[in-house]
Each structure stands twice: as structure tokens, then as C-alpha cells.
Length: 141
Image 1 (spheres, one colour):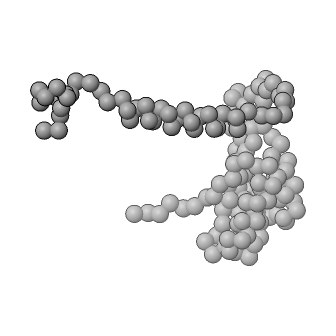
Image 2 (cartoon, rainbow, N blue to C red):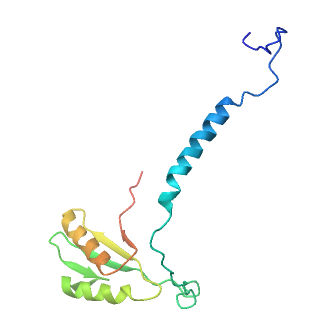
Image 3 (cartoon, helix red, strand yellow):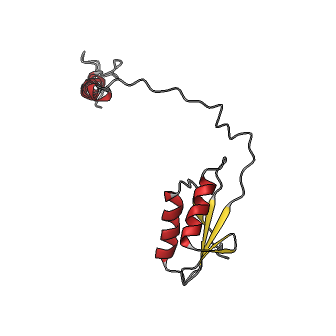
């Protein structure tokens, strides 16, 4: 067997070999010594405290989602109302200021080119909408 106590008894070793543990600890010590100076900031700035009283959204009911439909020809509809790109941009800008902010659901026809859908996504994100999603039909098995 490969177990040896060193005294010739041939029994199992009862001491722990700490050499690999020391090697790992030295490597971690070197890594922390190198990265610690990188984590300090040279410019001292006193950040303002966060004010959670004015933006308490837990008591507000969730806002109904906004649905933007895009047809194959690129026509836009906001909640089934025809829109131009400029009007959609201004309406999304107004909705982005509300608390809590509503979610934007984008519905695209399956033959709609993706560039039209991408333009609506970019437009919504540029206006400050944080939750932009897609509506699809679940496949039936």
C-alpha cells in the first residue's frame, strides 16, 4: 500500500499533509496583494445619501402594460390606435415619467421585418422605458 508513517510500521498515516494547503494560501495571498491597490479610488468623492421616501413604489398598484403593434409594412399602433413614429416617441416619453413605469409589449406580425421591431425597441429604450418585451403565441404540442 502507499500509506506510510515513516517509522516502518506500514500502517496508515495519521498526520495531514499541509503543503498543498500552504501553497494555495500563498497563491491567494499574492493575488490579494496585487488586487487590493486596484480597488482603492484615488479621487475621494462624498456621495449623496439615497432618498427612498420619494420613490416608494411598493404601495402603488402596477401600471397596465402598453402594447405597441408593428405591421408588415411598418405601421405602428399604440394600444390599437394608429400612430406615427414621432407621436409614438412623445407618448412613450410621457409614459416613461410615470411611477410605476408601465411595461411595453411589442407585437409584431410574423412576416414583419425585424428592423421595424428593432426600431420600436430602440425608440422605447431611448425614451427611458426600462421594461420592453415581446408578445408571441405559445406553440401547441
